[in-house]
Image 1: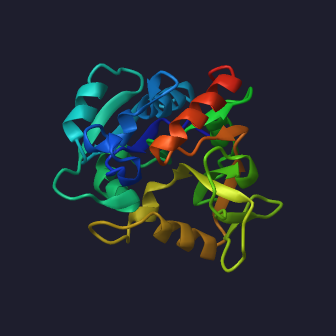
Image 2: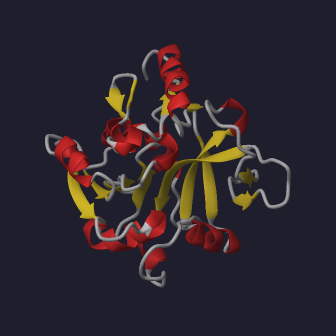
Length: 240
Protein backbone atom coordinates (compact mmCIF):
# COMPACT_ATOMS: atom_id res chain seq x y z
CA UNK A 1 0.00 0.00 0.00
CA UNK A 2 1.25 3.53 -0.75
CA UNK A 3 1.66 5.74 2.35
CA UNK A 4 -1.24 7.91 3.43
CA UNK A 5 -0.01 11.37 2.52
CA UNK A 6 -3.07 13.58 3.09
CA UNK A 7 -5.13 14.44 6.17
CA UNK A 8 -8.26 16.41 7.00
CA UNK A 9 -7.94 18.11 10.39
CA UNK A 10 -11.10 19.52 11.96
CA UNK A 11 -10.40 22.82 13.71
CA UNK A 12 -13.63 24.72 13.05
CA UNK A 13 -15.70 23.81 16.11
CA UNK A 14 -17.01 26.25 18.70
CA UNK A 15 -15.55 24.41 21.71
CA UNK A 16 -18.52 25.39 23.84
CA UNK A 17 -17.74 23.00 26.72
CA UNK A 18 -14.28 24.59 27.03
CA UNK A 19 -15.74 28.02 27.83
CA UNK A 20 -14.74 30.56 29.08
CA UNK A 21 -11.34 29.76 27.51
CA UNK A 22 -12.86 29.42 24.04
CA UNK A 23 -14.62 32.78 24.22
CA UNK A 24 -11.30 34.31 23.17
CA UNK A 25 -9.14 31.35 22.10
CA UNK A 26 -10.16 28.58 19.68
CA UNK A 27 -10.06 25.17 21.33
CA UNK A 28 -7.42 23.77 18.92
CA UNK A 29 -5.00 26.42 20.25
CA UNK A 30 -5.41 25.43 23.91
CA UNK A 31 -2.00 24.27 25.11
CA UNK A 32 -1.47 20.87 26.70
CA UNK A 33 2.02 20.05 27.98
CA UNK A 34 3.52 23.06 26.23
CA UNK A 35 2.02 22.57 22.76
CA UNK A 36 -1.36 23.40 21.32
CA UNK A 37 -3.73 20.52 20.73
CA UNK A 38 -3.65 21.35 17.02
CA UNK A 39 0.14 21.08 16.94
CA UNK A 40 0.03 17.77 18.80
CA UNK A 41 -2.28 16.42 16.06
CA UNK A 42 -0.19 17.84 13.21
CA UNK A 43 3.05 16.56 14.73
CA UNK A 44 1.58 13.04 14.93
CA UNK A 45 0.52 13.28 11.29
CA UNK A 46 3.92 14.52 10.15
CA UNK A 47 5.62 11.67 12.00
CA UNK A 48 3.31 9.24 10.18
CA UNK A 49 4.41 10.54 6.78
CA UNK A 50 1.54 12.90 6.00
CA UNK A 51 2.77 15.56 3.59
CA UNK A 52 -0.25 17.87 3.46
CA UNK A 53 -3.04 18.57 5.96
CA UNK A 54 -6.24 20.41 5.11
CA UNK A 55 -7.38 22.32 8.20
CA UNK A 56 -10.91 23.72 8.32
CA UNK A 57 -11.61 26.95 10.22
CA UNK A 58 -14.69 28.79 11.49
CA UNK A 59 -14.62 29.94 15.14
CA UNK A 60 -11.89 32.59 15.67
CA UNK A 61 -10.51 31.44 12.33
CA UNK A 62 -7.94 34.21 12.03
CA UNK A 63 -6.09 33.01 15.12
CA UNK A 64 -5.77 29.50 13.72
CA UNK A 65 -4.60 30.76 10.33
CA UNK A 66 -1.98 32.97 11.96
CA UNK A 67 -0.77 30.14 14.17
CA UNK A 68 -0.39 27.76 11.23
CA UNK A 69 1.36 30.23 8.94
CA UNK A 70 4.83 29.14 10.03
CA UNK A 71 4.24 25.37 9.79
CA UNK A 72 5.94 23.52 6.96
CA UNK A 73 5.57 19.91 8.10
CA UNK A 74 3.05 18.90 7.09
CA UNK A 75 2.22 21.58 4.56
CA UNK A 76 -1.07 23.28 5.46
CA UNK A 77 -4.05 24.18 3.29
CA UNK A 78 -6.95 26.06 4.87
CA UNK A 79 -10.57 25.13 4.13
CA UNK A 80 -12.60 28.20 5.08
CA UNK A 81 -15.96 27.59 6.78
CA UNK A 82 -16.46 31.09 8.16
CA UNK A 83 -19.76 31.34 6.31
CA UNK A 84 -21.24 28.07 7.58
CA UNK A 85 -19.99 25.47 10.03
CA UNK A 86 -20.30 22.16 8.16
CA UNK A 87 -19.79 19.56 10.95
CA UNK A 88 -17.55 16.50 10.80
CA UNK A 89 -18.82 15.16 7.48
CA UNK A 90 -19.81 18.30 5.61
CA UNK A 91 -16.39 19.83 6.22
CA UNK A 92 -14.74 16.93 4.42
CA UNK A 93 -17.18 17.09 1.52
CA UNK A 94 -16.28 20.75 0.98
CA UNK A 95 -12.55 19.98 1.17
CA UNK A 96 -12.51 16.95 -1.14
CA UNK A 97 -10.89 18.85 -4.04
CA UNK A 98 -7.98 19.62 -1.70
CA UNK A 99 -7.63 16.05 -0.44
CA UNK A 100 -7.26 14.17 -3.71
CA UNK A 101 -8.52 10.71 -4.60
CA UNK A 102 -6.49 8.50 -2.24
CA UNK A 103 -7.48 7.42 1.29
CA UNK A 104 -6.74 10.07 3.91
CA UNK A 105 -6.57 10.56 7.66
CA UNK A 106 -9.53 12.35 9.25
CA UNK A 107 -8.48 13.88 12.59
CA UNK A 108 -10.27 15.91 15.22
CA UNK A 109 -7.84 18.68 16.18
CA UNK A 110 -8.46 17.97 19.88
CA UNK A 111 -7.63 14.26 19.52
CA UNK A 112 -4.90 13.76 22.07
CA UNK A 113 -3.12 10.70 23.37
CA UNK A 114 0.11 9.60 24.99
CA UNK A 115 2.13 6.90 23.27
CA UNK A 116 3.82 3.85 24.77
CA UNK A 117 6.53 2.92 22.29
CA UNK A 118 4.19 2.72 19.28
CA UNK A 119 3.52 5.43 16.72
CA UNK A 120 -0.19 4.86 16.57
CA UNK A 121 -0.88 6.56 13.25
CA UNK A 122 1.88 4.57 11.52
CA UNK A 123 0.47 1.38 13.01
CA UNK A 124 -3.02 2.38 11.94
CA UNK A 125 -1.85 3.03 8.36
CA UNK A 126 -0.19 -0.38 8.39
CA UNK A 127 -3.49 -1.99 9.42
CA UNK A 128 -5.49 -0.28 6.65
CA UNK A 129 -6.94 -2.79 4.15
CA UNK A 130 -8.98 -0.95 1.50
CA UNK A 131 -10.19 -4.20 -0.03
CA UNK A 132 -12.07 -5.03 3.19
CA UNK A 133 -12.52 -1.64 4.84
CA UNK A 134 -14.33 1.56 3.98
CA UNK A 135 -13.34 3.28 7.24
CA UNK A 136 -10.81 2.41 9.94
CA UNK A 137 -11.21 4.13 13.31
CA UNK A 138 -8.63 4.64 16.02
CA UNK A 139 -10.16 3.25 19.22
CA UNK A 140 -9.34 3.83 22.87
CA UNK A 141 -10.13 1.38 25.64
CA UNK A 142 -12.92 3.08 27.61
CA UNK A 143 -11.67 1.92 30.99
CA UNK A 144 -8.18 3.37 30.40
CA UNK A 145 -9.16 6.76 28.92
CA UNK A 146 -8.24 9.91 30.84
CA UNK A 147 -11.04 12.42 31.44
CA UNK A 148 -13.77 10.33 29.81
CA UNK A 149 -16.85 9.18 31.73
CA UNK A 150 -19.14 8.13 28.84
CA UNK A 151 -20.61 4.71 28.14
CA UNK A 152 -18.39 3.88 25.15
CA UNK A 153 -19.19 3.75 21.45
CA UNK A 154 -18.42 0.38 19.85
CA UNK A 155 -17.94 -3.33 20.25
CA UNK A 156 -15.27 -5.01 18.13
CA UNK A 157 -15.13 -8.59 16.85
CA UNK A 158 -12.05 -10.80 16.42
CA UNK A 159 -11.38 -9.39 12.96
CA UNK A 160 -11.67 -5.79 14.14
CA UNK A 161 -15.13 -5.16 12.66
CA UNK A 162 -17.23 -2.68 14.65
CA UNK A 163 -20.83 -2.47 15.83
CA UNK A 164 -22.59 0.30 17.74
CA UNK A 165 -23.19 -0.01 21.49
CA UNK A 166 -26.90 0.22 20.81
CA UNK A 167 -29.09 -0.34 23.88
CA UNK A 168 -26.29 -1.89 25.95
CA UNK A 169 -25.30 -0.09 29.15
CA UNK A 170 -21.71 0.20 28.00
CA UNK A 171 -19.22 -0.67 25.29
CA UNK A 172 -15.48 -1.29 25.70
CA UNK A 173 -14.25 1.00 22.92
CA UNK A 174 -14.39 4.78 22.40
CA UNK A 175 -13.80 6.53 19.09
CA UNK A 176 -10.54 8.44 19.61
CA UNK A 177 -11.17 11.04 16.91
CA UNK A 178 -8.93 9.64 14.13
CA UNK A 179 -10.05 7.70 11.05
CA UNK A 180 -8.77 6.55 7.69
CA UNK A 181 -11.37 6.76 4.95
CA UNK A 182 -11.91 6.85 1.21
CA UNK A 183 -12.96 10.01 -0.62
CA UNK A 184 -15.44 8.01 -2.70
CA UNK A 185 -17.60 7.53 0.42
CA UNK A 186 -18.70 11.17 0.12
CA UNK A 187 -20.01 10.85 -3.44
CA UNK A 188 -23.70 10.74 -2.46
CA UNK A 189 -23.61 12.66 0.81
CA UNK A 190 -25.84 15.71 1.33
CA UNK A 191 -24.69 19.25 0.69
CA UNK A 192 -24.24 21.39 3.77
CA UNK A 193 -23.69 20.27 7.37
CA UNK A 194 -23.82 16.59 8.28
CA UNK A 195 -22.19 14.27 10.78
CA UNK A 196 -19.60 11.65 9.94
CA UNK A 197 -21.90 9.23 11.77
CA UNK A 198 -23.84 8.94 8.51
CA UNK A 199 -20.81 7.25 6.90
CA UNK A 200 -20.05 5.19 10.00
CA UNK A 201 -23.55 3.72 9.93
CA UNK A 202 -23.35 2.99 6.21
CA UNK A 203 -20.03 1.22 6.71
CA UNK A 204 -21.44 -0.81 9.62
CA UNK A 205 -24.37 -1.91 7.45
CA UNK A 206 -21.92 -3.08 4.79
CA UNK A 207 -19.66 -4.82 7.33
CA UNK A 208 -16.82 -2.45 6.41
CA UNK A 209 -16.28 -0.31 9.53
CA UNK A 210 -13.20 -1.50 11.42
CA UNK A 211 -11.28 -0.37 14.48
CA UNK A 212 -7.60 -0.24 15.40
CA UNK A 213 -6.72 -0.20 19.11
CA UNK A 214 -4.60 2.68 20.35
CA UNK A 215 -1.43 1.76 22.26
CA UNK A 216 -1.09 4.32 25.03
CA UNK A 217 -3.76 6.43 26.74
CA UNK A 218 -6.43 8.56 25.12
CA UNK A 219 -6.75 11.99 26.74
CA UNK A 220 -10.25 13.44 26.54
CA UNK A 221 -9.92 17.20 27.01
CA UNK A 222 -13.48 18.44 26.85
CA UNK A 223 -13.57 21.02 29.66
CA UNK A 224 -11.06 23.30 31.41
CA UNK A 225 -10.95 20.86 34.34
CA UNK A 226 -9.63 18.14 32.00
CA UNK A 227 -6.44 20.04 31.12
CA UNK A 228 -4.48 19.19 34.27
CA UNK A 229 -5.18 15.39 34.13
CA UNK A 230 -4.16 15.35 30.46
CA UNK A 231 -0.89 17.10 31.25
CA UNK A 232 -0.23 14.66 34.09
CA UNK A 233 -0.79 11.72 31.71
CA UNK A 234 1.67 13.21 29.22
CA UNK A 235 4.24 13.63 31.99
CA UNK A 236 3.74 10.04 33.11
CA UNK A 237 4.42 8.91 29.54
CA UNK A 238 7.64 10.90 29.36
CA UNK A 239 6.06 13.60 27.20
CA UNK A 240 5.29 11.23 24.33
